Length: 75
Length: 75
DNA sequence: ATGTGACTCATAGTCCGTG
DNA sequence: TCACGGACTATGAGTCACA
Image 1 (cartoon, each protein chain N blue to C red):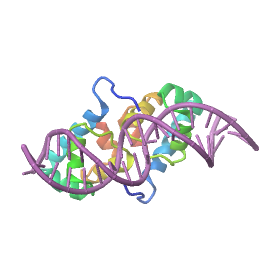
Image 2: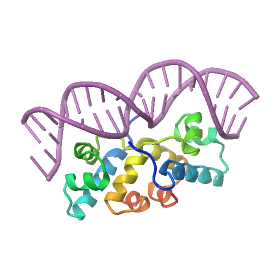
Image 3: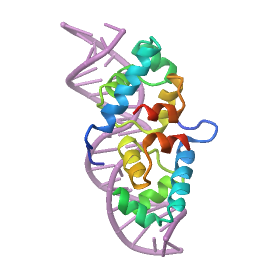
Image 4: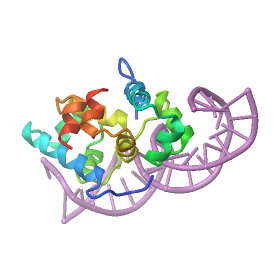
């Protein structure tokens, strides 16, 4: 799949994940554990370096205590 | 990445895409063209057979004339 | 107009480290 | 606590012929 819109969706998504994680005062390790994803992968996601798929998105939303709609409203 | 929650996110997502496409009276071919994805790939997505990632999600949302938030509010 | 199996190739996602 | 790299495996992206 090709890249880029104006501000890359991957970066916007990652930014929102990080902002919400900090809002909850969680470390990356804690969120990764909650969401059941790899710690380094979460780091990549937050930096906009990964094109996350539905299943992981759902898990992250759960770890962040947000519905999918709430999460993407922030994106 | 592992599979399955109660109702699989892939199926729920696909169902919403299809419902919205029909709301717009579009064929799969038309939506696929709008969104810049392959028709058979879209078919797979609607049937919940694909674990779609951010970049494709964004394109589908565009083709469906919905923001990401609006799209996921329906999921 | 759509569903499906089969396929290639790129990348999603894991796990080990380091400063 | 995190960014980043290397190396790996599983799966997503993208296409086709045919039903």
